[in-house]
Amino acid sequence: MALIEQTIPVLLIILFLGLLVPDLFKKLKLPFVTSIIIVGALLGPNGFNYMQSNQIIEFFGFLGAAFLMLMAGLEVKLEHFEKLGKKIIIMAAINGIVPFVVGFGIVLAFGYSLMTAALIGIVFISSSVAIIIMAVKNANLMDKEIGQTIISVVVLEDVFSLLLLAVILQGASPITSFPLPLYFGILVASVILLKKFLPRIAAYYFRKRMSKKDTYERELRAVLVILMAVLLYFSGLGVHPIVAAFIVGLLISDIATSEIVYHKLHTMGYGLFVPVFFFIIGMQLDLSILGSFDYRNTLMISIILGLIGAKVVSGYFAGRWAKFSKRNSILFGTASMTQLTTTLAVTYAASGLNLLDSALSTSIILLAIITTILSPAAMNMLGNPELPKLAK
Image (tube, rainbow, N blue to C red):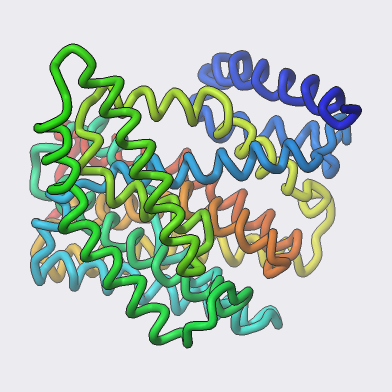
């Protein structure tokens, strides 16, 4: 009872700040996510130490991470996979392999283990589908080839990076007795088969069982039942819950087609759980790193500049290989450097398994903050047709 009484004021403060702070930070052009993370860093144990976490707060944060990954998976529609031709696959390979090698090499050079280096390499592969789709829309690129290409490539990169994360986490903390190659094969086969047949089963149910009067309520309940069933299946396979939540979103993205149902799911997650998750992520920021210059600062600078450089450069050459103009090639590289959902989910999951220390966690969180500010602004500028054209 005492734990509950201690938790309610903390949740109240977090949710209150989630309402108040973003409006204040809008004047500084900072996104909602960034503002909550910064406040968490300032009020948490590594800042002014006004707020401490506990088991209930951590559970809310876990649900927030799961909802965040679920909503990220919902952004991945079947149409994105239908557009995956040779060009998209090769661009994703260039824009994924080069950053992976860079991230892996940086962390390995600082003396970390192969497992930790591989985790950071996965972070360097991924992007943030939800943020990039929004940025593409704001730059008026949705109906242009470069806009569709950006979305298709980052979707492929995110899906692949999450599958790799599932394998890495299984290797670090085995939940199932399957050998890794067999585990990966079962995981990929399960995703493909469920993605193929689950929407058909759901469509049949909706067509036979639902009346127009209660369509949205029953569709929401049906989606939640499917969500829990598929999540239970992947948990049985030994897939980490954070990865499983993304896969569930990926699988039901073509089932939850109603905007009303989507917004209800969004409200359930972002109304309570997701702000707590971002606040907890902020509490992991070790602000003392910024106060003195040592190897941790060098590591942080290397990771941030390494990711930005690797993504922009590899994206530029991938774009030029695909015969895009110089401007659009830079635009592609700039868009792909956006880090948020997968990045913070990897940080959260890996920190729970003690695979990342405070220096790496802080570096990755700062990377997410910086890229979510820089990338959309740069995309807006590069997508502006009134700016002078670069030579082809």
